[in-house]
Length: 356
Ligand code: DNO
Image 1 (cartoon, rainbow, N blue to C red):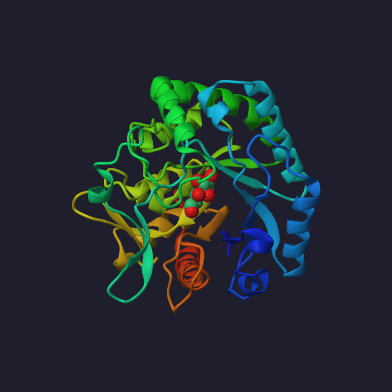
Image 2 (spheres, rainbow, N blue to C red):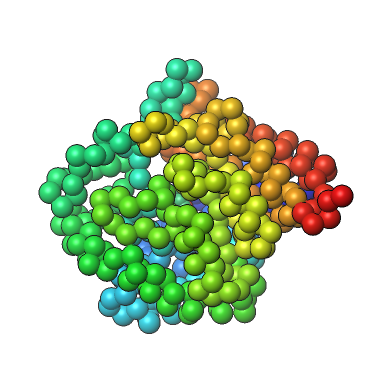
């Protein structure tokens, strides 16, 4: 197949071993990172070499990094930004030396994804991550001691308040300015070592607690891509993150950016949007959620997509216990479903522009 099927692996500590990952049909690439180094510090080459070698021993290729985290001071444009950008560039060079071709990152203030519960029980006995507005709406992190699942526990409540206040003062335009500075520094380095930078959209793609969010919709993705017009300035198009807001038409966006050649990495998963805008993570199958997976894959295949694809968050099923979203079974089912869609679409779809 043209697309490159991949699977996230949290390294030696991950309860899902590379032995298991290698047994999933069609699996090609390992998506991993150096997890024991803080943002703003250089990754030891030895750690990268270990991931690459372990992958190779299992017949897999370590060519995708998720993520090199962007230090909050880069996003806020404060402190020694030049030094932090230098470190970031050095990490890209080191990844490239060990075979990495795609580096995922995000530009979300303070928190990565936000959910209100990680083990919501569905009628079939499976559990998944959900975000319910009625559990969110009265929370104010400047007043309450909030402990949402998945939030970085390394910050004290005081630090979180300070960061939230700083981002509120920065605002969206300030965040855009700092993203531009980041890209102008990083993209030429990525280009020169054959790496594509893949920005992950904000999850969910709208402001939470007044924090600015900018990687959220078509207009803003256009703006991001035009900040530095290079194939190395690319998207990690996450269907579940963009797709939990009804204003995003996911197949349309996938088609548009695939045609432009600006998608380096696809995170493919399904979500069910509820009437009040809450959402539940669901099984990958189209009929299980709000997204049309066949249309997503068709849009990629029709544009000759050769980038990386990974099944994203799975539910916990078959009695599995583990890292929410990152168990083995449902992601393996997701991979198999995606294989089927891609096999069918890649064989049947003439590339866009070559249709009769
Ligand atoms: C969630 C992931 C994100 C993603 C980062 C990329 O499960 O998709 O945490 O890795 O946003 O920087």
